[in-house]
Length: 279
Figure 1 (tube, rainbow, N blue to C red):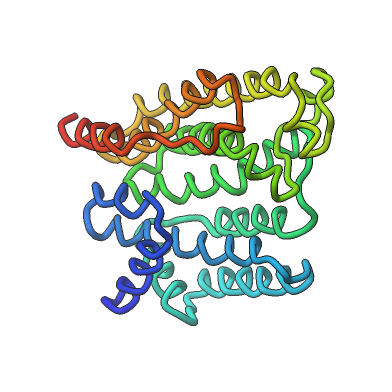
Figure 2 (cartoon, rainbow, N blue to C red):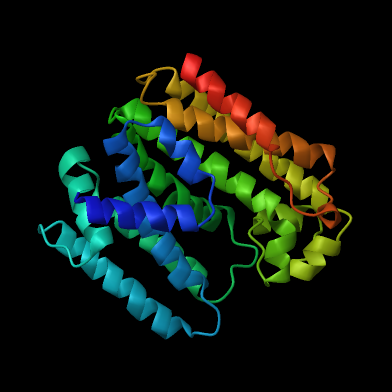
């Protein structure tokens, strides 16, 4: 990875305003830069999927161009700073082509018609593509390619994404989206429309069940981390510690989305990060 390509992906991550930029600083420089390259890829394809005012066919064309770039990457070819950086990631950490393609497929799910009340199976597939696939790439960069690390990626990705979904119910509804599973909504008599679900007094019962799903995945990930290389799992533990408490905050609010979007206080994030350095 050249200094220029490193600077490019680092700047892209920093400009995105994500806490990921600071969170990955706990890694040694080569692993940190590799994670920035993976994030830069995710950011670019996510922006394609989310860009307003463009039709699905146009977005699909651009996502297919990234499929072709990933295919070329595994033939040793790169056409820009992100793919050149990813070429180093592929060579140094043995990350899987299938996981990059899964991420693109997840973005494609968001690029078309808004997702509204998917089935449990569809939701699980979505979580795997947009979160667990990123985790499978990440754990290799963190320094653990064991089956236990893959289990961490599987479960932690789902825990994180389900937490994101619960946190963003109000914002998603405003954008015509509803990621809560159809079966649970139907069982509680909640309308299968974004606005209808948000206004339903029975919505908190659905959210509590999704929170239980997230907690089960966090617990599964936590147990798998204990069987992994402890140093390699520091970033994964930080992500778990940063997101898992959000479930408690949401439950204390009784999943009342009129109160606005929640986030973990900055002081608490700093304490969590400090704990990781002394463990």
